[in-house]
Image (tube, rainbow, N blue to C red; front, side):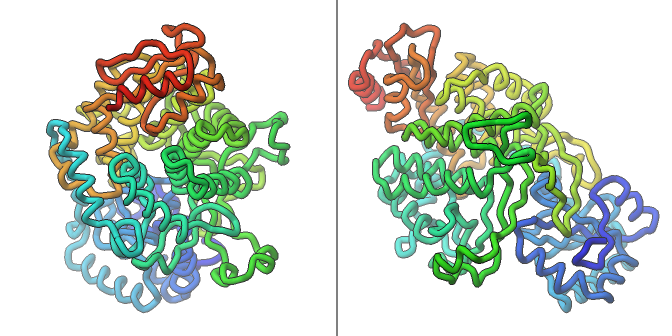
Amino acid sequence: MDDVTRVEWREWGGEAFEEAAERDVPLLLSLTATWCDHCHEMDRETYAVPTLAANVNDGFVPVRVDVDRQPRVRDRYNMGGFPSTVFLAPDGSVLTGAGYLGPDGFRQVLEQLRTMWDSKGAEAGRIPRPLQGEDPPAGDLSPDIERQMLGQLTDRYDERAGGWGEEPKFPYPDALEFALKRDRTMALRSFDAVAANLFDEYAGGFHRFATGRDWSGLEREKLLDSNAALLRAFANAYLYTGEDSYRQPAARTLEYLTTTLWTTDGDAVDEGETTGGYSGAFAGSQAPGEPAAYSLEASDREGAPEPPVDTTIFAGANGLAIDALCTYHAYTDDERAARFARRALSTVRDRLLEDGLTTHFCTLEKRAETPAGATSGRAERGLLSDQARVLQALTSARSVLGAETIEDAVSVAEATVETLRVGDSFVDGPRTGPGLLERPLRPLDGNVELADALIDLAAVTGEERYERIARDVLEDFAGASDRFSIPVARYASVATRLLEGTLVIRVGDEAGSDLHRAACRLADHEKVVVPDAADVSADEAVAARGERTTTPATTPQELSEHVSSLLE
């Protein structure tokens, strides 16, 4: 029992399901997040009601899951947002579910569930469609994929408010980056809308989304993964435009990540130093805080309580952040970005990576505790999203910083292929665990992220096998590509890279040289730069795309001209 609710929450695990089977009662699964205000509200308003809590404790096996720490549970039982209130049969199948429930609504659902259970029992359970064992529809990659996605973006573009869709309004960083190369005007107007409406001018960083079509009704939590993705997107917008209006949100988000979300394993250290412990990494999220604080003037807001930060270190989100900081450094020479990217990468490699498999999370701060109302859960290893994002971080650090990361990157790629590849694409994690965890889930977004990282790895290592695996992955989903929606615009970007060839620039000089810096600044954010390339002479750079390769360039201007000829 926690300090807020009166419900006797169990850990997610086999024991809870065994108890439900022995007692012949359903499980109540509560999916929550530390940053979720509505989750905490349901604790206060619903689970704290003595009669309701007693009803749950007597008639159900209540289980609470932190969705950030246990994403495989989240992805199988999410009811469309958080909190998710899900009733399960002892075999893990879904009886019914809802989102936030106030006391009256919760009482009504309990009564309906009890009637269902008394009449049908576990036979009322169902298996969600994505877990029913259907293979994804395979097909061939074609230029139509890019055209169809651009058509989707054009059709759903909001001419009045900017961005895509009606409500709620999400920033869609992958769609922003896709549009940068295909419809610059639409992309930049959407960047402007995201910056004007989701960016926190006082504290830096981006809020998660807005509930209204006009970007009203901000949901003010700040998540590391979405902030990292937007930092990279705005850095890429700056690459194409050179305009400070896109660099500034990226710079302020960098500052937010390296101050508010930066966490260490004990006593704080100066930015340029490390002590006997690890050098730190980025915390997972910051809660919204008091809504009234956002209406205060800056001078008054300075004295308002700082919204709490969940200091859990998540492997995948840190991978995104490292990639984003490398991207920003590549275009700006910002040493703060490079320094924190190296420090976070060191922590990920030391604490979360072993034999090519990532551990989903850890805690660094000695004072870090499991947040109220959440259960800690065991950190899983080898989740697809973590593998893909850490692989991308390792390749980006090699490309931009010249870091010695290739051995680890190859290890991550090989371990992912060995443990998660089923057929031509990948499942989301180990096919073991209670409930529906043993049923494989083949997420499109995680597969696309991995394919994108594998293409980069192929360019950095010269191993074409990794690009062939990436092609197999995308072809495994291509039969449904005409139905893919805006949140997976990256699928179209990666398909185009495979069809047209990735721009790869190999530089004979080390990272930070004039030619390397010039290569990083060439306006194609999907390119791969390889510093200190063994097959290129010092003071030279060679660009290639598909079957075409340029003659060596010796100056930034000459390199720019050679690359322009490749892209024509």
